[in-house]
Image 1 (cartoon, one colour):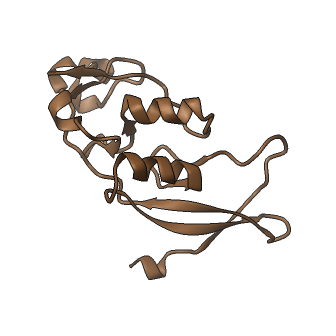
Image 2 (image 1 turned 180 degrees about the vertical axis):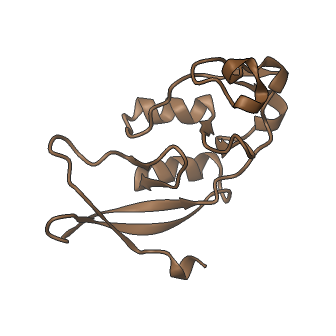
Length: 152
């Protein structure tokens, strides 16, 4: 199947600064710089699959960088429903946009980048260690909106 995936991506070069290190949408997929991929692979060797993509300038078609398309981010059943805030107080309404999300510590132990199973799959989660590494190296592009509560 990966042979059918694109090998390049045309993007508009930013007017100011450099291309963000993480490109993508909240639902995914994510396209990450080589440095982000290296950190993820260092923290979770052999877990994440990716394919390289050549970024080309939208207007000229000129190649200017190599990024990596992350494939199949692991799904981890880590949601602690009893300690999570729900939209309108109802689990059927989904996770609250601003409320607390509680994760089971034993489910995420040793994990660094994952998604929850359906119907909550629309959000990426990361360990404090991955978050700290991305922030300390100023690897931008992911709005890390909130920290989660980790329960026993």
